[in-house]
Length: 340
Ligand code: SAH
Image (cartoon, rainbow, N blue to C red; front, top):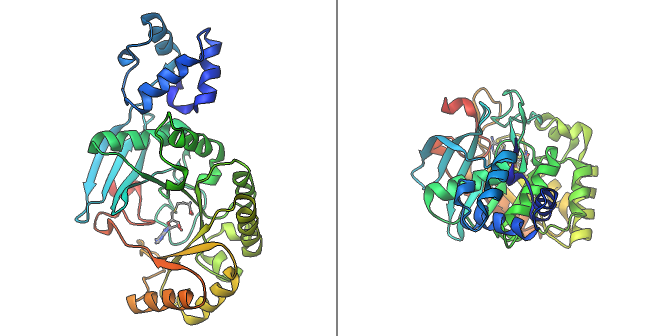
C-alpha cells in the first residue's frame, strides 16, 4: 500500500482527484497530517466516513515505532526507529540556542564508503521514501512535544543518491501547509554527487547546500572519500560555483579535521586557495574516530589554529560543537549496530 505521507501537496491533490474527490480534500488531509499530526484516518473528522474508508483502502499512515532512545548529557537525543519493514534507522535531535535541529537519515545504509564514517561497512539496504523522511520529524516532535525548527540531512545515507524522495520530503517539510519549516532552516549535506548538485540548483528550493569536502587534493580526498574518483575536486568546486551563481545562495563546506592527515598549515593554505572568492562558509568538524578507523582527532590547538588561519585569509570558518558524542550520536557515529 502507498504511504499517504509520500506526497507533496500538489501531488496529493492529483491523487485525491483520481479518487473522484475535490482537490481541497488534499489540503484538509495535509492539515491533519502535518498541523494536527493525527495518527489515523479516523481522526480526520471533517472528511466523510466514506472518504476515510476509501483512504484506508488505498493508503497507510506510516507511524514509526521508537525502538530505542538514548539521551546525552548535553540534551542530544538519539532515536532508533522501526521503519515498519524490519529495518531500523537512526535520527538525532540536537538542542541549539536557536532551536531544535533534527538530523535525519535519507537511506538505510549508505553506498558512499567514506573511510572515516561509521556507516561504512554496513550493507546498503534501500533508500527511504519521502514519507519516511518526514515521519522521522513527526515521531520526534511527538515524543518530545516540542517543535523542531531545523532539519539537516546529515544522518545515515547520501541524500543526493535518493534525490527525488529527498526533494519531495523537503517540499512537505517546507510547505506552509505542511510542517512549515523555512527552507533556510533545512540543509542537505552531500559527499559531492555533481550532476545532482546541478539538478538541485534548478529546483527552486532555498535550502542550504553543504558539501563534505574534507580535503583539498584529489589524492587525499580520494583516500578519504571514494566518490572523489568519480567526481573530482575540480568538478565539485565548479558545480558549487555554478550552484551559487544559479541560486545566489551561500554554500557550506564541511571539513573534518584528522590529525596529521588534513589539518596542517599547508592544508589550510590550499583550502583558502580553493575557496577564495566563493560565497561560502566552512564548518570545521573535529573528526570522530570510528572503530578500526585510521583517522584520529586533531588537537584543539590545531583546530583553532586552522580556523583562525581561514578567517584571517577571508574564508568564514567556524568549529562545529560536538554534541551527543557520549551516546555515539556525533557526526559519522550513527551506526545501527551500536544500538542492537
Ligand atoms: N552523505 C552525506 C550526509 C551524511 S554524513 C554527506 O556525505 O555529506 C554527514 C556529515 O558527517 C558529512 O559531512 C560527513 O562527511 C560527516 N562525517 C561522517 N563521518 C564523520 C566522522 N567520523 N567524523 C566527523 N564527521 C563525519
